[in-house]
Image (cartoon, rainbow, N blue to C red; front, side):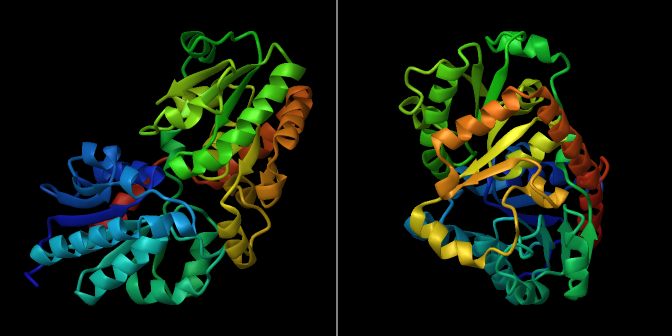
Length: 379
């Protein structure tokens, strides 16, 4: 391989949340490493920071075993393209961000080629597939974690680790004037607003939107004055929602999810990063999620945590009600939403618990701290 350049960085992130973190990481990294050349797998945020993308996250962000199998040819092609570009001119460092099924294999191949590998946003080995720790120990030169309980896990496993804090602490902000935002979105600030967050990936939306739409119909019948607002993740096709939501008075909000969450009375939230965002904005929520039945049946025995929602895991208890797989029905969602809607004291209690989650995520500056670690690894 050619001699490694001190100005070249390979970044690989396969999901919208990873792209967000990658963009912030590179933005804070550039002052430390002038003239840095960044390439790899990412999305609009990483590209906006000057990265050359070999593939976009919208083409590879898939959930579930069989969904991955359908995209296997594309993923293999991308894998080969990333390795070929690294062999053409070796990077000083690779930063892998989440997306572990793909990234751990990529990291192993790069490490075998003499490329130093860092990992930012840990695989959830504390939740399932703990055997990956041995692979991480062999492949990863430094792990940068965003949850406080992860640091001791990696230190005990012999993996160099830094807890940087969660980058969303800096990025998640409510609207300066929530009432004005609601009016601009066509919503009445004097009436309750239920925010609906069905997921950021097409497969998630396809599994989640039908029971969510059924719950909205029940809520509209039981509480006619309630308003509904759907948060549409960047890059999602509106046709994913249109059939399920036909005839429902739902306002669609694009690229302003945090403003919506900060102004809503409560939210119906797909388990994932959105539950952390809701915690940071102290939005009371009901957490939902559904996978294909076969994927869930294969994966469930491997899960070793008491909760699915990250906000609940950080809190160490079920702060927000979780309705997962068979428990995720339109009736149960509507019932749980009504409990929150009709009981302001319960919403206040959940907000208080979510403030504790926010405090556990660390102070501002996580992306800058992560960038300092990466700069040292490059230099």
